[in-house]
Length: 371
Image 1 (cartoon, rainbow, N blue to C red):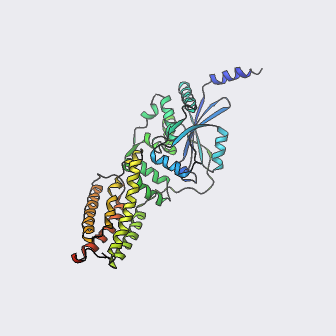
Image 2 (cartoon, helix red, strand yellow):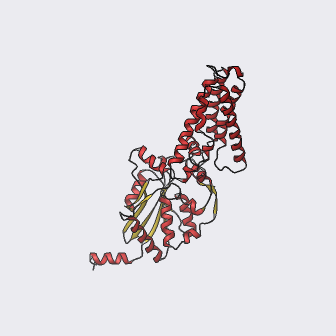
Image 3 (cartoon, rainbow, N blue to C red):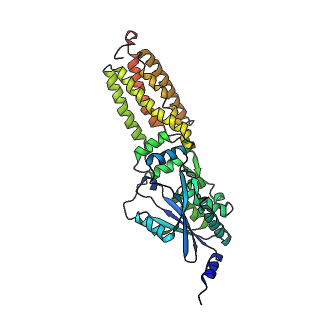
């Protein structure tokens, strides 16, 4: 005899839920290159999957970009039916793994209760941080809280990587973007990480769930399209290439005795980059953007290279060269943490060429139309 619907519901909720973590591989879009994670609760035949990676990606790029810059980007947890969720990731040709967590009944119920709490309208939103608070770290934290911190205690071992190093691996083939990130993203991305911190990436979360819970990943779907490169992007060549082109332009202008034009080109270019970097550092609430060693390389005061007196520009260029040499030394001894060698060379080379051109100008021509 079939149970009445109300009794069936009571019976289903009395059973301990099944907890499964799903991790998704890389996708074609930039925001998909780091993977994704979701956690599902199954009771009887009903499955609810909680996705902490939901935001309005359809909003204007400038609005979403500014929110990320300020550190105020709002994400929230959405609840999906499991089959619908899997259908979406298969549609976008992203590999999917499932891990069933063999936890105690008490832990399973605590996980389910925490997820339901987070899914309520008044609790569902949070301020996103790419490294410290995202779809993967939220799943990690739910599991850890339900198990009295056991997951975190088992994840304290260091890994020979930083946030920047791990990001470079996921951005293989995107050297221009990585080169830009080396300038815009500050030293906070270069600290060594523990396994716990590394679980901001879904694939590292998957590895640690296997180690901690013995949850063997089960392949649900395998990507059919071309794979993504695994060799970390190396932006040094890109920095040096940009620096070489810039230095060549300054050198040709100086060789033609157009030192004033070369000074204007150098001053406007470097000062413009400096204004962007200093503006980001002042506006952002994100630590990795606020504390940026690149602001020591790019100075807004480079607009002084537009000064009409060649001898004044020569003194300023000498000061800039001395400062850059000091930064080279600080980078060599490890005081500076960011990978700024290519950036330093790209800035120092044109300034050196321009300084030599000014140093060769006779004092009598220190203020003329060309120098």
